[in-house]
Amino acid sequence: EDQVTQSPEALRLQEGESSSLNCSYTVSGLRGLFWYRQDPGKGPEFLFTLYSAGEEKEKERLKATLTKKESFLHITAPKPEDSATYLCAVLGTSYGKLTFGQGTILTVHP
Amino acid sequence: DTGVSQDPRHKITKRGQNVTFRCDPISEHNRLYWYRQTLGQGPEFLTYFQNEAQLEKSRLLSDRFSAERPKGSFSTLEIQRTEQGDSAMYLCASSLSLSGEQYFGPGTRLTVT
Image (cartoon, rainbow over all chains, first blue to last red; front, side, top):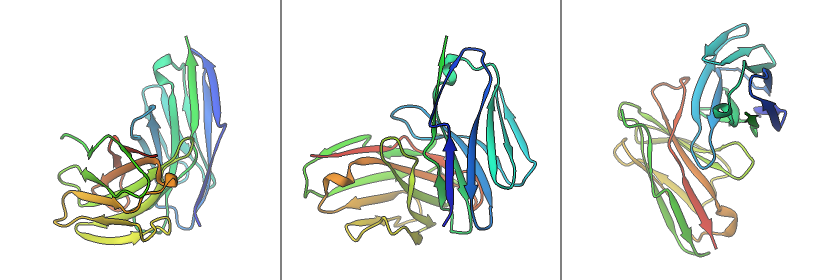
């Protein structure tokens, strides 16, 4: 069964203090690894898809990387508006089924 | 592109009542998914449609749950004889391809009293 573990569970940063979130996974036949952002009371918002080890994607202050066992979401010089829960999910061999981690709650203080 | 929409956004019901939620996917997406999310957890997969065919169901989807997508467009999720443990956010997502990103709606928050 596919499994995803995210760490840390919560992360508090000062504005401008760069850091990384971790997503460790086990999956039979990785077809994609996805990062989402979720604000309280809202649905997840798609950020990135990574398909193979060594791949990197960037968007504004966020950069996602992928190895054979884990993915990192690097946040450079975060701002308070980056505060949210960040979810990692894998797509394995089951039809369309995303398996999510429990998320990392990021709080950025001004 | 109006994105994925869900209705209602909030539902409060008494234990034992039936509830039905609706999801309208992005118009050109033929794949539609239902997930359930409880507080502090990531979404959990419930079921998946390609066009009108329901191709996979999680064991989380007990026989009190039924989902339909009658014409391959919108979908409904019905919960019969609701229990307090059914209280959660029910999320709908759609995608263009099997390996592509899934776009989520705002969710329906269900509270069973």
